[in-house]
Image (cartoon, rainbow, N blue to C red; front, side, top):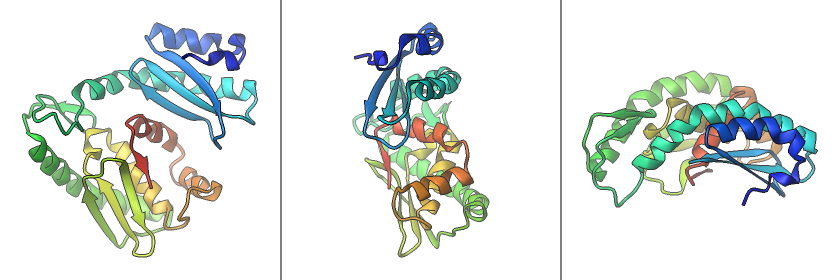
Length: 220
């Protein structure tokens, strides 16, 4: 249900109009959350607004994300149509690699092996890039078939796990997961201090966070 009436229509008119022209419905809800959360899904932009945020602040934040939603909607649709993570989808004629279709036909096990191989190729350089920026270093990096998470971190062992499904998305999504998990080596929770560290390392993290959040997985 569209709940945009929580904010005066006059404040949302421009954003709603632009999104509607791109065949995207704007759904807004107020929740007990700490931050404004955006989730882009096929033909929908779902926004969760903290209870303490003013209507004007919420409207301004939504206005800033309109271009992002429109620009990324085609990719979200393509990913939804290809369902690259479906266990029941044995063969895909359009395998996605870093968000781009590939001319390969692979069954599920072959796809997992392919994604694992691609992650192994890029992660050394990505960790070398982001570890100095975050100021934390992982002693070990592993890949795993995670069905509910994009990544996780064992802070005691300084071990980072990455989902083998990440290569289906833009490589910036993998970079964000790496930054997210490295930041847990400073803060083992999702406190305000943790998110401040993420933002300081990767100011544009929200775009990639939202893209992955729309795929029903989490970061730990």
